[in-house]
Image 1: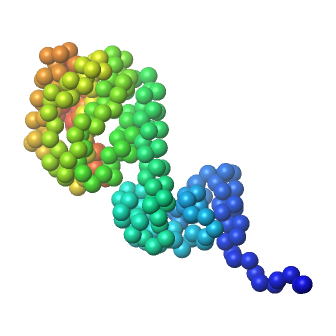
Image 2: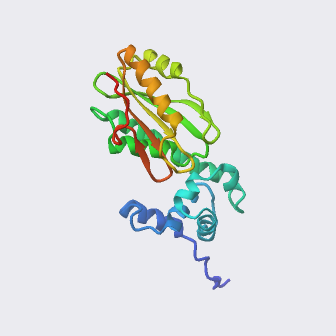
Image 3: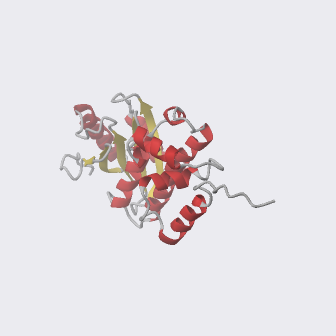
Length: 234
């Protein structure tokens, strides 16, 4: 029997070439659709993924848009199972954990670029408002990162008692307040300023410093300390 002359599908071996390219050069030389292709190759077997990757980018606008998307929205794209969608969420969660550990490795911290990277990764793509606290020791090293309140947009309710009880539990000497504005508008509200003042004044009675309050938006941030409106902590 003569061997078949039917050409092999063009994507045969394409996954291996993508992986080889990544191993040798990283992602710097990749198009966005190739990054999505490579990621999907770990979740979807034996299939040409280029069209699917481009469909995802077309629907969500960018690689960041895909990673920030809800599981439900991702699975509404034809060809994306819950298993495949979960891989995108896993990438984000692992990235956040990595940055959190990187922050903890810093000898000291107040408002470094590593801290901002972590906060943006943890909160930047969320659709609901979250209020978090970084608890620090006497050397300003991170002891813990706590999400204390989750709520609908612009209605997270934070009780200063929660913040300070956790500080005492962690034997923290200082803290940094962090919350996100899903609207992307990072200017603090009157409520944000009052809350910061209340926590700072109460913390001072316990010999705990409040170094800063960061508001994280989609692509920007606001630092109370850098803007000169941080209440005196000592």
